[in-house]
Length: 123
Image (cartoon, rainbow, N blue to C red; front, side, top):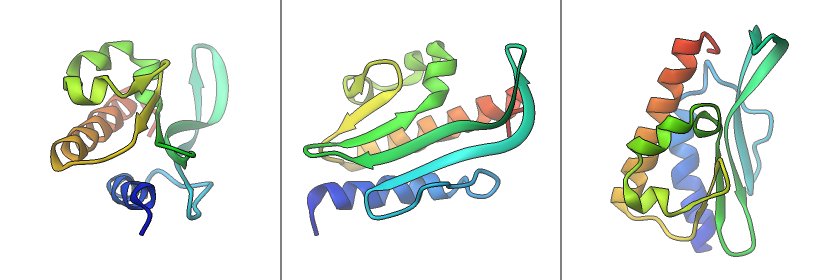
């Protein structure tokens, strides 16, 4: 199996723990995402859904898109240095290889982000 596909499958398994109540709109061999589908208002704007996280296999890395860090920048302070150094831009982590420590950091980030979404009433 391609190393990126293996990384994709491991992170996807972690994400699937949140479905339901989050739902996937895109689920194939190279993409997976999770959304909260709920009528809500965020910063005065009505929304029917909120993006939570997603995966995309790119040419040389797995893109792990994690919106809780975009909506709550202080979440960066809870990331271990190994995960934080993979953050490119505001909410995308570029993962090339995965070890148990990094997998556990991603698991913790998903849990913390989900809890933030719950506190906001988005889930």
